[in-house]
Image (spheres, rainbow, N blue to C red):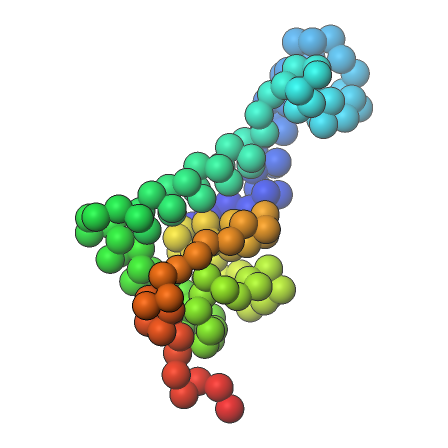
Length: 139
């Protein structure tokens, strides 16, 4: 199971209360003030999660280990269960509401969805492009 940005905000809310109390700030102080580089400069846990998740996916996809195979299998599984016939790395995943259940169950697919949401692209080798296409799936 993966957590959404809303879930991270909910989990991190008590920490924000403690920090505001420690700094003697009013409870209604915008949290963005604490994350601003000119003020406290805290890193938001969602931002750190996104960076780590996308970095891990990139490392797994570019390594020379069994992690490549398992990651590709997980991404292919999510692609097929989400009925995506084009290469999964080229799709505009954030406009496909039906992929949410797969993204919650599949960490590799969730990382790809997060990357696409942040407008990041991952290029695939033109030779491998045909592997990620599902032929005969379009009507």
